[in-house]
Length: 217
Image (cartoon, rainbow, N blue to C red):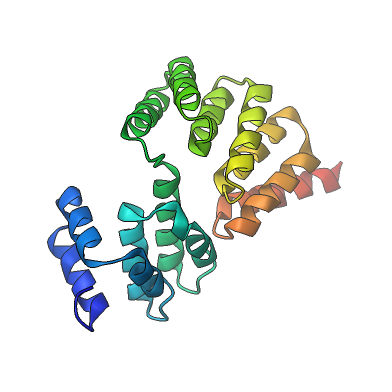
């Protein structure tokens, strides 16, 4: 780690190399351990936490997930969102570059509204690495867009079984239950997402709307 003034040097390193992500990753790996970044993430200085969260987004491994989940409840909103983005990034790294490339291809297909092609790509991801939770979560999104509700629920549940902290899969499952008219189940799924990540404002609002709907019936 750079000297005693670690954050100051971390901030300088990240600022100077922000235009070259691969170089930044190399420098972070060369000069900071995950343990260093975890300490920074838990700092009382919000700027320290935000910088550490961004660094973990680039080079973090699954070992730091519990600390990032805890940081979702940090007093500083910037640190909370930095931790959220870091979680998504880590969840999207299987450890196999080929699998990760296929996952990104599937995400591109989703963005381009090629939903059936996305299902097929994510299925290949899952067949290649059956324990990669994000493959199931992304395929659930594709199934949702195709209105194939049972398949979407199945994949959300599988993603959660592999990654119990996956607030995105809980939220996605809630969305499917809403479409199926299963309001109690939707609220329960949304609650689980919020327990993990209290920053999901749209999910909190969805719960209020659903409760209001059931009370007016």
